[in-house]
View (cartoon, rainbow, N blue to C red):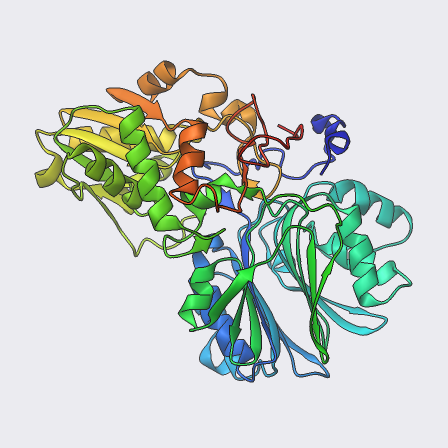
Amino acid sequence: MSHELMTEPLWTGDYYNEGSGKEGLDKLKEECGVFGVYRHPDAASLSYYGLHALQHRGEESAGMCVSDGTQFNYHRGMGLVKEVFTKDLMQTLTGDISIGHVRYSTSGDSKLTNAQPLVFKYRDGDLAVATNGNIVNAPTIRRELEQSGSIFQTTSDTEVIAHLIARSPKGLVEAAKDAFQRIVGGYAFLIMTNDKLLVASDPHGLRPLTMGKLGDAYLFASETCALETIGAELIRDIQPGELLVLDADGLHEDRFDDHKHRKALCAMEYIYFARPDSDMNGANQHAARKRMGSRMAIESFVDADLVTGVPDSSISAAIGYAEQTGIPYEMGMIKNKYTGRTFIQPSQELREQGVKMKLSAVRRVVEGKRVVMIDDSIVRGTTSRRIVNMLRDAGATEVHVRITSPPFKNPCFYGIDTPDSRELIASSLSVEEICREINADSLAFLSPDGLIASIQGDNQDDYKGGLCLACFDNDYPTRLDFDGEEKFGCSC
């Protein structure tokens, strides 16, 4: 992921996720969640509960592959974890090694053939692959492989890694190292054979991946909340460029990238994606989001009668804003938890009702009040406008919008589903123009420095993380280190 790798024009189609093209997208979507188990007799059950805890990271499909040491037992399906895995089905998934996946597609169609883990037969037996993230140079590698005879079964970028491993004359571990050195992107990989589990993070650690233990078993998850759900002990984060190999001889720590980059975790993990009870780089998400709200109040105070957050991701920040200002926090909006997945809505008129299906304003709370509405981001602006108008319709006399992230100006090429830059409202309009567009009385965004300080918290000297801000600021499109020492020109 060096500067020279990003010099090829982006409009050639050689990079995945150049604007998702998904109709009606007005909320950022992460790629996926992964969960792995090595040497536990209830590997499938642990994976089920782990995937359930990661459901917020992907609702399109779910899958699991389990090995009993000699063969794979696996199942994938479209829908939620609880819909895909029935009680009877779970009894067929026997074994003590497992990888699981929940998917939201940013590259590859939303269909069963692209559901993960992807499972293959190759010269040394069975191979299963699950990933969170994007391989941005996958189209180029795919063309090369197809020209030399490879036949792809899916449109997912993840399949590229399986072909690179299968075509190599080397053993699994060395073949995997070579494959990871060829690909560019932000990713967390779990790769399983009948008796091995490989775990890898991209050279900058853009996608989260953690390791835990339950008894003698090792577990791996996109977020710590999944480890907490099953009672596992958190050991540590997987480091950038690290490759872990688990086999009959135990756990082996290795690397496929010798450059020890400082971790540059995607900023949106802190702002929106991760569950508030998850920890990343030692920072708790709820605490970090509260600090974002507090910093927002310091940077952009406005006098009002109440503060409310757009549920669920902005509630922590709204509490922080309220505590900093002394303005009461109130539940001005309610989220309907039973709307389910609404990927298909048959008409524009019904799409317009989508926000009302998912959110309702509490009239008795907001009526006659000046409201500060806290949200985590503005993408296209349509949802923000609908929420502001919903509060006004419920009787709010003023609606002041405060966003606990910088303006989202650039599409992401590393595993977040975003529209192209033409649809990102902040890429073409000023803050004042966006304010008028969403019908707010005032609008302010958290500064990049305020975001960094909020994530670091009180342990600035000890904090070992880093942050990718590529989607926010063209002045430093990707900031790999909090002190700004290491930067690279990203595809934004």
